[in-house]
Image (cartoon, rainbow over all chains, first blue to last red; front, top):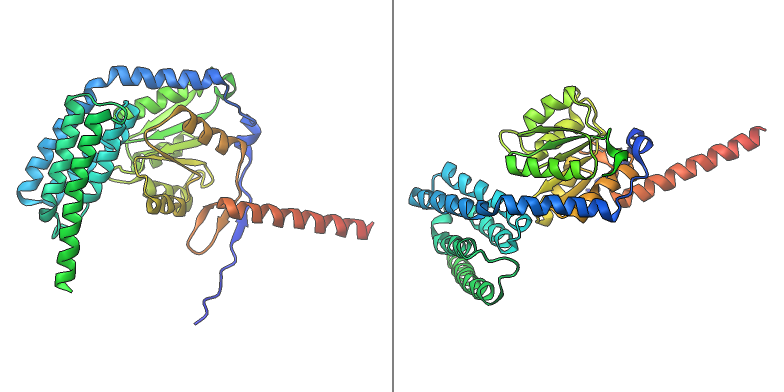
Length: 168
Length: 171
């Protein structure tokens, strides 16, 4: 069957915002002012990473007992927000670890118990980053953490692929 | 401080108070003078009825109403005070399917956390300096996707040329 392609209707949008403010240009001093606010935010919230990683570890400890949906959801929420703060506070590894962690926390409840090891590995890596205040790419420690996590992920994904193949 | 933006009204929607404060601080730093905040999409919808925001910055993961649900309500609700308002989604979701989902809901711009000065200011200047027409289909109402923007401009130029030809013919 051939599905007809719908012709979109173009609607003229109001130009009031552009009329009032355009052209707006941000000068180097504007960028510098924004960067100063970001720096101040970093200075004022240094303990946030440690606190939030601790909260995540406690939440996961509870959630891993019976994988109740609400508890797992709370872990996703903490990890998601922590990922947003991480890079802003100068901890890009926290952002990448949390992004990866959220993928596993969002797995179906039937698979989640088998992902415990890989989730634990993420939480452990986050604890190391937070307690040792590993900023940037983390240098040698960062590489070691990433390699260790990659091994846990490879093992989990390999086991999962084999289980799917076996079921098929 | 950029005095040109002192009358710009921005609604900041984020469930995390620190992130809300940070976004407000960043906007103040570039001279945005009028900022309102909301904790989730539902509260933002309520505030938007009395606060005529020129631009909305919205997080995605919020409860009970998410950022995407909020965008859909702004674009589609008959009670929406301004379905055309530029919306910038500020989120930790970096996956392509999330970007497409937000685009399909009708956002103007997508900003992945962590926030940087350049990325934020680029999104702000884009929505102010380059207004986009809207497109309506049976499943979508929102800004014309960028590639479509070219099509719309071309169509508008054709229309103007046709009208000019008709006017010349009548004269």
